[in-house]
Amino acid sequence: MDWRIDLQESDKEIKEHFASIGKLPKHIAIIMDGNGRWATERNQNRASGHRQGIETVRKIVKASSQIGIEYLTLYAFSIENWKRPAMEVNILMSLLEHYLKAELDELHANNVRFMTIGKSSSLPKAIQRLLIDSTEKTKTNTGLTLNLALSYSGRWDIVRAVQMLALDVRRGTCSPEDIDENLFSEYLSTKSIPDPDLLIRTSGEMRLSNFLLWEMAYSEIYITDKYWPEFTKVDLYEAILNYLTRERRFGKTSAQVQDNTQQVNISYLQRVINAIKL
Ligand code: IPE
Ligand code: IPE
Ligand code: MG
Image (cartoon, rainbow, N blue to C red; front, side, top):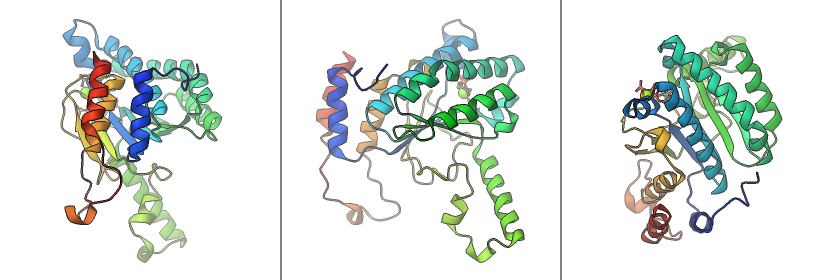
């Protein structure tokens, strides 16, 4: 299905307004949390929460692509998540495999570039293969970059970067004096993508859980009480709208960062979003 023609009038309106503002977050990162609680509250097993969570992934990837987000990083499985009961880990791995196999053609047809970050050597071999193939197949696509954080943790990535940097110093390809923030970033698995502008976390938890620790130094944080399986594209629009109201100062004063670009007509956008909700 071509996602460009599968847009409702209200989505088109949102898209055009977001585009005209020119301040859309380039990179959105999401901690997809609350699958288990969503299921438990409905007297279902945790697996059904994860299954429903995959449906949300489908919807949010599509909506992000449709409104012109350039990078979407989804925290799908942390290194710490390996400590969960084996049965739950197995279910998560098979859902991931199933999702990728089922979605790859549609992602590719919609110009999505797929990539992953994380300690992929810990993943089952079949999934490693699938990730390599999916990345390879979509590598020249120019639309949304969908980055899945799988068996990922921020500290793991930083330590890995330090190790590789130390190796280069030992080899003599760089010296300790050359090391600055830019050079260090080059050793992280996120080197090819900009830092997230907006972090969304579902299920009301107010923590980073070892996600993109270096990269989120100046990300705007948006937390919603909704569980991931019930998060919708309208919730995504609301998160973006909220982001548009933030003043990103990066340490400067408010007067220093005032710009003359078009002011965001928040109340208008809020009305459009409210109308979709009805
Ligand atoms: C997020 O939902 C999915 C993963 C971490 C893999 P959870 O499974 O963490 O759900 P809760 O937080 O227990 O409700
Ligand atoms: C964070 O969620 C990891 C993912 C969403 C993949 P967790 O559910 O693992 O986080 P904690 O344990 O509540 O911090
Ligand atoms: Mg959780």
